[in-house]
Amino acid sequence: MSPSTGQPATWIFQANPAQYDIEASLRTEHAELWNLRQHASKVTMGDRVLIWISGKKSGIYAVGQVTSLPVEQLDSSTGKSYWKSTGGHQVWPRVEVRYSRVLLDRPLFRRYLEFDAALSNLTILKQARGTNFSVTPAEWEALENWLTH
Image (cartoon, rainbow, N blue to C red; front, side, top):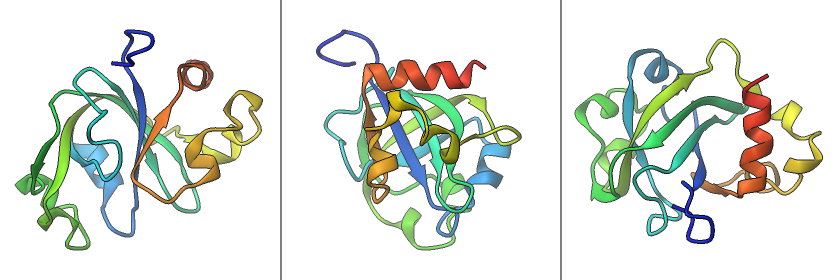
């Protein structure tokens, strides 16, 4: 929850398809553990999550909700099967995210978001290195508008 509004906080969790087969995972899984390399002390149950896939076709590919508190752990056995690297075998704070919408057939591409003045300060557009990015309430409102049209 955002302390200032009492509403769920919104986060972008980024997946690198060179490290993790996120598209296969999104096609099959209804929920997954996600690494919290940044903001582990701020992410909490009920927060909204936008799943961002990096690369040439970067953008938002799913929407979900945090359904667990952060716990330092390895990835689940199912999650480990999607890793192309050793990422699942490392202990990180992780939360479960349950997907409510998967947008693989119609993602919200970065190239569109870059031209929206309301998203000009969206952290992932300015500094894409990282795994977890906070989204302001105003940015969520703009993103929600994109996602509903």
